Length: 355
Image 1 (cartoon, one colour):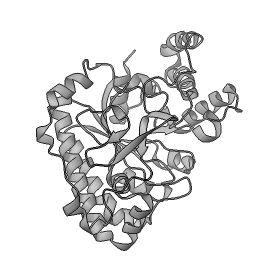
Image 2 (cartoon, rainbow, N blue to C red):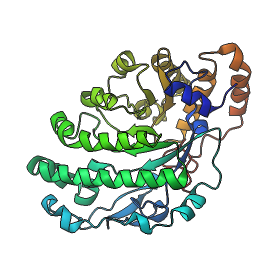
Image 3 (tube, helix red, strand yellow):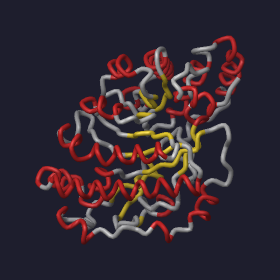
């Protein structure tokens, strides 16, 4: 049998994997303390751009921009004079790396989370409505800001590779609501795609795996995203046409996500048996001819049980005889596992270095 890490790299090489990946066993996720896109410890407070964040009780390790605070940036055309870019050379990267990654697990993928991509950082600074107005009224100024922000992200990635020796970059920029994109596809293609492409290329030049995280309905640009060369696309939420994604892109990208959190996992009226069926259906859909890591952005601790169902079903998906004993041992272990607690992480089921 091979490790989760070895199995993942088989997918990257476009080889048939031994089993469907189990996300908690695959990723050693870190939120680099060297980066302050959120307040220290992900508590209430200010980030390194002066934006104030408050802890949300529903997700205590995922603070949100505080309502009522004066925006840092009120006029996008003044971003060059208003925004003060942190000097990354002043950070004690070695100390942060030792704190965040005391031991690198050789069986997993060390993945660093980079939150607040270009669009997210714009509305962090301005407020959501004002950011959308800026996109409509001053697209060139937005473009210049996006470019500078992505330069800053590339600089961060280089430090993360040097001092943390990460394997993967989780790059977060949500581009859609539950109904559609936040902006016209043409705007995204002209002003957001080019700087993000530079981030992807920079990560690949360093030998890093690139995971593009973008929540919401992004159907209208998913072709473009995959054409950019992302290695992993998540969270592949069911508001999108996932049947088309599986049909058109199986074997071209690793999908991570796919599970229906809102209607099934997060709904207490839905029995566990239906959760299990949902997981198995999505594995059948994505893994039959492609590469898949079941997951869901969920507020419910039950996502941990969903992923456990995925372990049992996915372990014997490709090589049933070789991994049957492993699957049965995990099934028995599930009987004693506590699925009522979220555990340390931004969403239940995702363990990070932030406690």
